[in-house]
Image 1: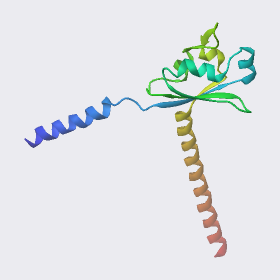
Image 2: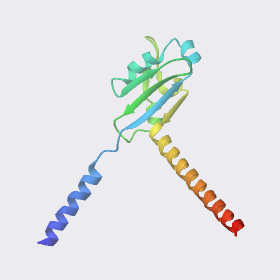
Image 3: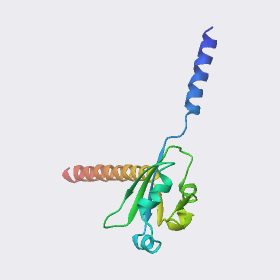
Image 4: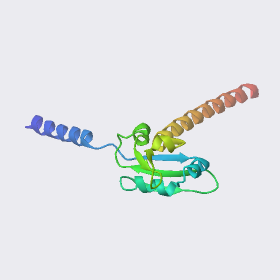
Length: 140
């Protein structure tokens, strides 16, 4: 009886663990303002093509234009997002890769940043430990 209950419990744990969809991803799409001007479009107009599928937010200002895209599925990467067709203006439809300067996976970049920061802190701790040992030896 204990074996049956533990087996059922184990199956339920594995089922819930593997059945979940991957978490949502956040992408930053960066555009060259001068190129958008030549193409007679804006990030807001490009955002209209994406907002029916994803949560989006367009940003413009003194620097390059950008769109922040939250994708609810974890299985989409930068290449697949770039292959999507968007409307530049009333006459022209192109793939996002043709217009975007860069598509950045912010979740992946965040993980890389955290790993880099952790390794930097680890090196700092080693250097501090060595300097303390050096001071202790010189004090003797």
